[in-house]
Length: 102
Image (cartoon, rainbow, N blue to C red; front, side):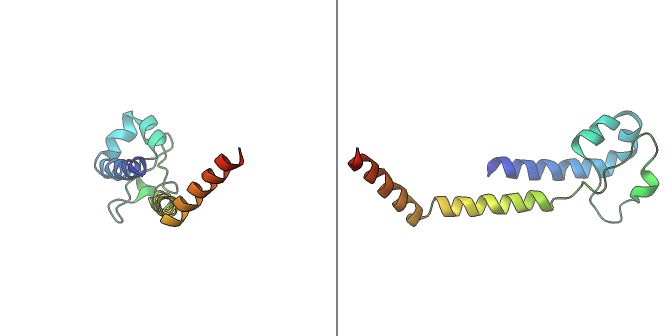
């Protein structure tokens, strides 16, 4: 869960940096844009079609935090299930049965 939160926070920070330094990064650091899928997610900050050029295209379709948020919600659900009293009781009972069976 902490790793997922770190990914979401770092993605938002990189998105803000992409808004500010997109022109400079396109000129010299295109590999950074492609590696981290950097694109400004603030609506109306700039037009992605006017910023994209032939040498360094911006990954507009790949940007977004929806999948990261969905993974975070799934992790919270798993944590809730695996730390529930019922699940812990069932696992303890299964361990007791295996000890008695052997």
